[in-house]
Amino acid sequence: MSDNGFEGRGPHVNPWIVAIAVMFATFMEVLDTTVVNVSLSHIAGNLSATIDESTWVLTSYLVANAIVLPLTGWLATQFGRKRLLMTSVTGFTISSLLCGLAPNLPSLVAFRLIQGATGGAMQPLSQAVLLEAFPPQDRGKAMGFWGLGIVVAPILGPVLGGWLTDVYSWRWVFYINLPVGIASLIMTKLYVFDPPYLRRETERIDYWGIGLLALWVGCLQIALDLGQEHDWFSSRFIVALVAASVLGAIAFIVREWTVKEPVIDLRVFKIRTYATGVFLMTTLGFVLYGSLVLLPIMLQTLFGYPSLQAGIAMAPRGLGSLIGMPLIGLLIGHIDARKMVAVGLVAGAVTLIWLGQLNLNAGYWDIFWPQFFQGLGLSALFVPLTTISMDPIPRERMGNATSLFNLMRNLGGSVGIAVTGTLLARKQQAYINVFGAQVDPYSGPAQRAFEAARQGFMAAGADVATATERAYAALFGTVQQQAAMVAFVSLFRLLGFIFLLLLPLVLLMRRPRTRGGPMGAH
Image (cartoon, rainbow, N blue to C red; front, side):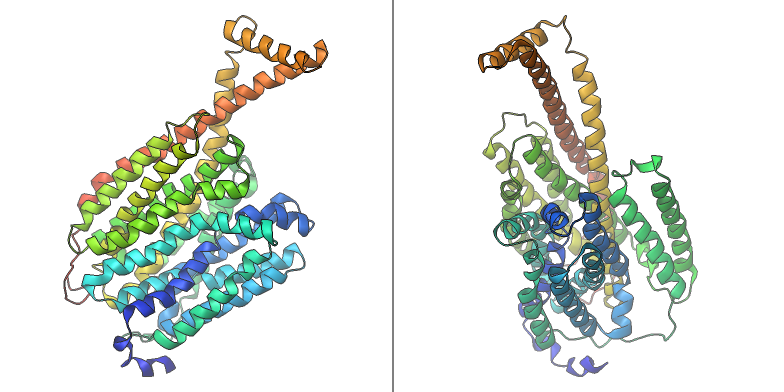
């Protein structure tokens, strides 16, 4: 590979310059998973499409991203890590420009597919390059820096997307990637080098493995994105997608476990610490993305926040992570990382249960503080968990391991978004039925509330019939509001308890080495 001629110079590059180079790419790619969400209604209106049709702008990106992501380790050995990273950044930047110029919805969806496919390799590649660039004792700091992009970008996305859409247009949500992509491309060309052991080991390509991977991951992602819209298993379309995904996953696992030269080496799961870390990170993705969806919906539907203000109200979580990530990176060499993971799980649980105590009278600071401490807690969880999980992985298997690690976190996030959205809708309906049953002509409080509302409408100039009708509507609106609030807080508590249930798993992980020695030595 042409880039390997530079490998002797690689160790002389300051690792923090390498970190900045790959961080640009990671931040840009993760940001694009959420930045478009708040612009969907504008995209639909501008391109003469319905809101349901416009959701394919999100789905197409996530599906392509999820399929390419686990292939990254294999692609890096085939084409070279540096070459693959530069190709990914170039493709992502060009497709971002094309998305901004898209004249209609089909072309936008097609360009988003390309954007997702080229972006899929960026997260695991940047993680592998960072772990390679830093000595073992500094990998905690490197993961702290990398974790900033992974945790802060999804939180910043809705804020930035809302602001760009309101001030300029939805097209600037894509144009914003151009300067970042160009900067990342230049820095990658100058400062990132392939390690000497990264060689193509075989000319054979596992086409069956690639095909089965695309089948089960693609079907699962589409089912998760569209399930609630189609009422899940009452839809034959969703049932067919889930069946194809399950059968495809089983066939894929059997194929990759038995074939001599797999496209994805699943044997890495034999390493107990790594396997436990992947499970914990998958659950972290489930809880993090699930709660990220719940909070802005609650702020907009119950507290009347406009989309931009709802995004800004979620910024404290990013602020907490911004402060916490570098601190944790510095401490990780001096404190047992497993203890930090346990502290992070407890902090995440406490802050989610704290959010589960909110009511309709909550003010800004009632929402600010639990989120801020949650950001700190996620720092204590994310950085050490990544460091512990990757510690026992041999260098030559690092690309494969980081690909699977990131795939499972993203799939966990997709499942979290789907499950919390479905539970919210169904819990809300259940609580409306429970509370509505208490509102009848024989209930004193209900009768007094109804009469007060009717008198208010009559005082405002409505006749008796109109005031009565409006009073009934107001009473039902109050029931709906209370039911929605109870549904939100019960889900926050549920997500908090999930964190607590994970605590025993930390005991299954080995303490990482913090000083010297080649990776994979044990």
